[in-house]
Image (cartoon, rainbow, N blue to C red; front, side, top):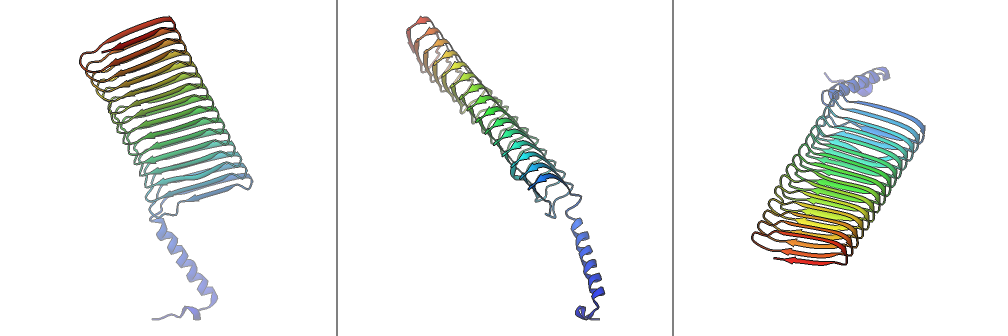
Length: 374
């Protein structure tokens, strides 16, 4: 039996169209199940968009609260994402989230709070399971980014208070990763990367203005890596690449201090760097086996450079004073070294190459020069 729809009365046409629309909605609910969106806006020119239209998503929640003027929030949950939630609160003027996205993820959570003006946030959780992203921005023109890809049970937390601070957390294929960044002040920058790392932790805390921290962990295992800077215009870079039971901690108190510490093919490695004062410089590099480094500098314009290559290496260096310089280099086998300088304008050179090396040096006073070579 054929029915000419165009010949039907208008009332019957509307009835058939309504039934068809209801049928489409019911079919769609069997795929995009139990997703919910709550949007509340108070003010002028606020824009909030939420996308849960992908039919493969289910049991997801989006909550958007906007109070103020010209705030923008854009949120998407797509590609099989389930049992996940995004909460976004904006209070102020001109706050923006360019991307808040959960893609092919399960039981992941994002909680974003922006209070102030012209704060910027972007976050992507891709192929993640049990990941958590927390962000709080208080102030003006702060910028934060969180990226999770193939991460499992990891946490990324960013807290920014002040002006023009920049934070970026990148976690890729790791497991049980934890990253915490806190910046108080203005024009501070902190960027972290964790690649396939396993039990990894990264902590970056900066108080002041113009501080910069760069933290990288790559194929590591029981990793721990931290940078703490209190003052102005300090630079702290910490890198761990291939090792296993690694630990690296950098603390800088003062201004214009620079610390760069690298562990490459590390095994049971540890590195601790602490600088207090003004314009102190420390650079350290380790490669393999039972490594360890400690550098402590307190004063003004002290300079330390360490290079270690392999075997059972360990180096301890302490400088208290002003304009002291230490240059140390160890290459292979059962090396150990200890150098301490107390005073002004002291200079020490240490170089050890192969076999069962050991060295000890101590200088106190002004203008002393020491050298050990084995």
